[in-house]
Image 1 (cartoon, helix red, strand yellow):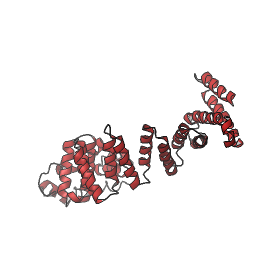
Image 2 (cartoon, helix red, strand yellow):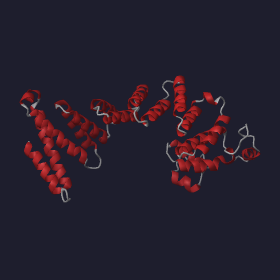
Image 3 (spheres, helix red, strand yellow):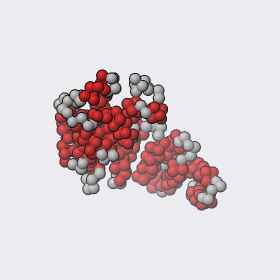
Image 4 (cartoon, one colour):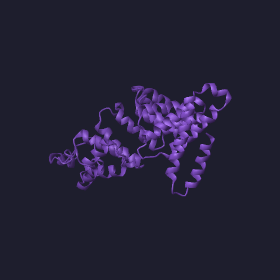
Length: 327
């Protein structure tokens, strides 16, 4: 009963009480990655279950006694704990424990070859053992049954991403994954990083635009997107860059984002340099030029203030003076 009535308790309280079941439930519900803790408390809960080699999962005398005393887990809870311990064991490369957990799960589940959750564990077990073709076969079977199975799509991408020389296949797998789940922010972030790795800045900008839509209040995303537009260059991209860098500074809760400030000064300066070209004067609105000048002043003043009294004070002041002189 103590393991059930723990809704308002934090993990430290559960650990102090040594409530194995409640601890595992907490780890599971909060999606914590604590393999050692999970294995320790899972072993304490399962006890004889992992050593039971009989065909029936609850036929041993000890399990019957524990059930009569009300000490045993119900079947669904036992399966949840076994799955949790199996995943944790794979995380720490304890293949022996993982195999024992998987064997118990297969005994307790009807038609385990038709269960997506069991197949997931089998695929992970193959990965842990380095049996990549077998793991791919399992994930392909899961996708045949459900083409939108995000777990199988993600695992196939992770396998390809870890292999040297398969960057193109990895990107195709990630494209497939995002195509099936376009709201997957983690997928867009990974695709953005892949694009940056191969210097596809237009692709990276598209990915980070999707991330900004999903997380409009994240100042780091705006800063990164601003830097990508700055790298692309050109008047229109520089205007987009300064917009996102300014937004990053506006959202930053720490009171000052040095990276965004430096980038804003550099981007506004580059915009002024490009707009000064006789060929491009007609393309530039006079207000945009004034905005760029004010942004250079704003960035320079704030950077000088932030470094005041530090060892870098003189160097930063010298650089900012040079930037101001150019406008």
